[in-house]
Amino acid sequence: MSEVIKTHKCPICHKLFAGEQYLPFCSKRCADVDLGHWFNGSYAVPSEDLDELETEELNEALLNGKKDQK
Picture 1 (cartoon, helix red, strand yellow):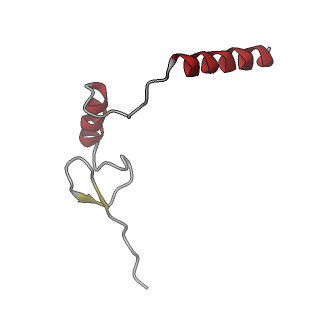
Picture 2 (spheres, one colour):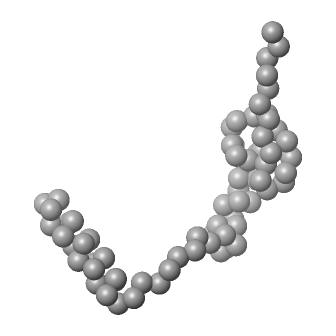
């Protein structure tokens, strides 16, 4: 029976590769390029602004959680 080689497609350069050292990237260079995108703000995670009441409730919950840990 032949051995199956799993290939991946690099999300940066779109090259097909079989290695697993830098998954999901094909190389350290592509991994560093992706990290640079995060650092310079090219990628962003969407968020919603909380209104004042939601912010107060969140702060209270966080403070209560810290008190429970002591």
